[in-house]
Length: 106
Image 1: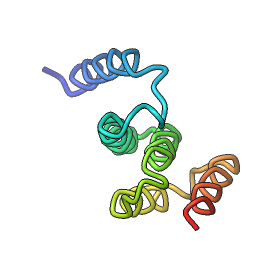
Image 2: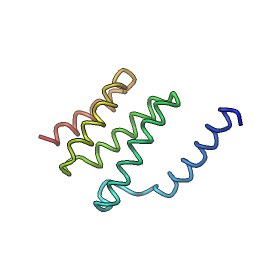
Image 3: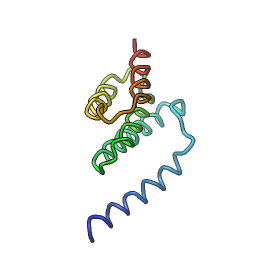
Image 4: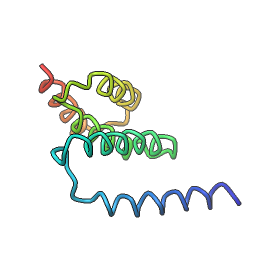
C-alpha cells in the first residue's frame, strides 16, 4: 500500500475520533482528562510529523490546557518542549495563549 494512501487512512481514522471527542473540554473529568491529554499530545506529534505545524501548535496548546493546574509537571514539560520546537511557526495568538498558560502556572 502506498505511503500516501496509508496517511489518508490514518487521517480518516483521526477524523472519526475527533468527531467523538468534539465538545469535550478540559473539565471533563480527571481520568478522561488523562486520555484527552494523551490524545492531544500524540495528535500534536502526528500533525508535526505530517508537516502541519499549525495543527501541531493547536493540539499542543490544548494538551497544555488539559494538564495546567493539575500537578502534572512532567506532562507540561513535554508539551513545552514540543511547543518550543514549533515556536517559529506559532502565530502571535498562539504565543499569547502559551504565555497565559505559563502565567496560570505561577
